[in-house]
Length: 242
Image 1 (cartoon, rainbow, N blue to C red):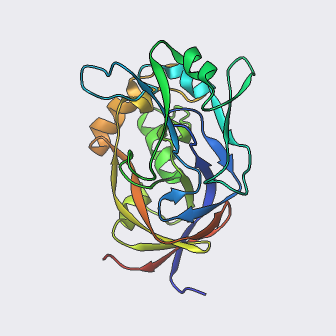
Image 2 (tube, rainbow, N blue to C red):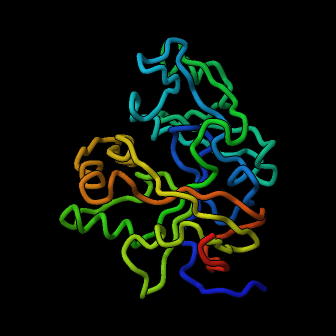
């Protein structure tokens, strides 16, 4: 048993088998050196990149990607499992089926990603306290945490400060059988403006984060000891700032 200070519990877990598509909710997952097993393993790219050289087909260009729901056909083998996608029409296709790429547009193709290669960090962590704080900045508008595509949503203790995950940067967190380091604040972009349910845009979301939080919301984290994590697990600070 590790000793430390309990700062909260895991309220939700999500992985994103396909970049920019909907989240797959989880009750438990294996945290590996590269993040949650099965997370961010596929992406769709355009043969003709945008003028900024960014090749990925994302929510920026296609907000309706959020209505495509990927899931692992063999959840007990997350890193080897086929990934299936339920389309908005209810059709179930393998992520590598050419029909899916064709549905997403001319010149679109699928790519399997090397682990950890195309994202800023293996994990994204957010607290419910931060979501509530942003809601207050938006005149108590309801804010869905899935706007921010976190892997771990943490419910902090009653005495936690506002935006508590920023206070954990540089410390070591023990969650279930794993340990991780919150490394830095998560700098946000216009993707957070897209509602994960309706796919409608609200530019006030990013404006509020820019005005009040220096364009940062949540934190990036890196695993330091792989292991299982689950909804309800205590989140324990086991070391002070590195």
